Image (tube, rainbow, N blue to C red; front, top):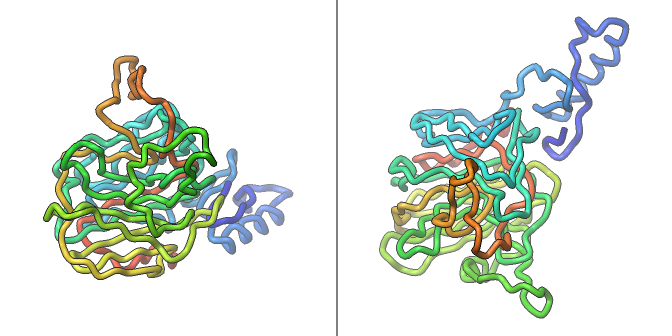
Length: 307
């Protein structure tokens, strides 16, 4: 199981390990040294939730992605904003307990319906643990967003800048929906964009460092109406002075992809894209997402990173 960029051996209880007790104790000690909270299939973790972000008084929603099977993604927050995963995702082992694994497919997404509780407030934070397996070919691959091409329904977007490949380097051109958001971004950097409530042009901000593929990283962005702050692994990576407020929107929350959510249908019993449209996964996130949390305050500290 991957966690924190390393691989840990199965943890066994030395008190019940019998003649292999010494080896199990050594494995448990190594796991603790590496700071891992997950174990390989078949092992029993002592506390898979230790060190994970928790639900507190400013938590709006938190998707732990700990489900063992099925499309339901339960919200541990106060409003119980349960989400639905598309058939292009699967349950997997995460940074803490389980995680949702995303593929390069149009049906790879998690969808939370529009809800007033998700509306922006005077303070805002979005954070998650992510393990990207590839950076996108085009402008970006969203981690989470309330942003659509429908008029006046853009609110905010958190993603990873892609390679921004264009013809003739690629046979299939991107729709270019996010070109303006990643003009100065480099592949692998975080990008956070929001639409100001005063109807001006969208504002976009990038991290100073690039994420590392195949490594768990905690990413977070906060905005207090005056400063956008970007955090990587709990440390302040970049900050930008910008005044205003985030535009309210009736857009749903889409995790791990970007497309027109009006094309979603549950006719077949699964939530998937209706046939007949563009099936190309331009903005599909590839990798794992765990512990996605949205807060109604601009967090500047992440104590769980020190555990």
